[in-house]
Length: 281
Image 1 (cartoon, helix red, strand yellow):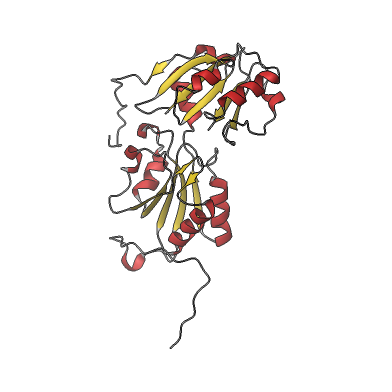
Image 2: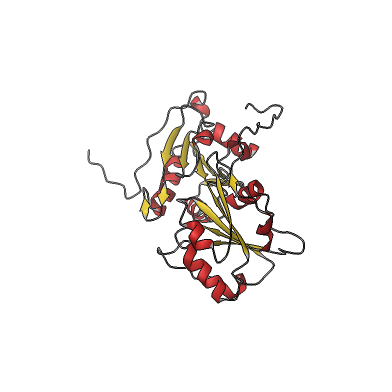
């Protein structure tokens, strides 16, 4: 008997999950889950529940080990880390992977640092699942800017000094600034948060000042927000480039009058975790 080679992507190896038996789903589900900025206590309860039922966890490189450890020991963990130009998997490969695992009847958690829909390419993965007819759910997470502002005591909006906040990406070729509306970002009394902008900090600072933003505008850089090795540098827009050179990332650049309230330093030691009834610590 002859067989024909299928043109479909290779199907993922089925994982044995105790307790399902004949009641197993004919098709699984994909969960796009925000893991938050790193501190496992900033994970939402819904994200925790999704992790605890996962058969497969497809995770970013920035997801902390403490968060990954919340998944079942039997769950398969697959790192799809992306660091600048070094990608272990192309985005199309990740999309196909999620669909293939779900078609095997598995619960698939796509675990992303921060929030899936804030510079996380979660929209592309959602579209891929929809096109394949795979059930997909989105679980929002605490994006890094919220954690960075909170730890530094710097509100992203503040009456009298920040009536708006804008999140932008600083990702571009090394040394180049991204193509953004610099005139809009240079307006006073707003907070501009730049993700993935450490390597382009000099170009970003130059573009903002050239567009009219005062070089004395307060600025804050937060490296590894919410983690035990978090570092914060309080500076100004004109000093942004020099401050960025002292850090290795991942880091956020935050520019705006409200950053005058920020405190420099590192994560405080000895902070006791909150005790929440019904949630194991």
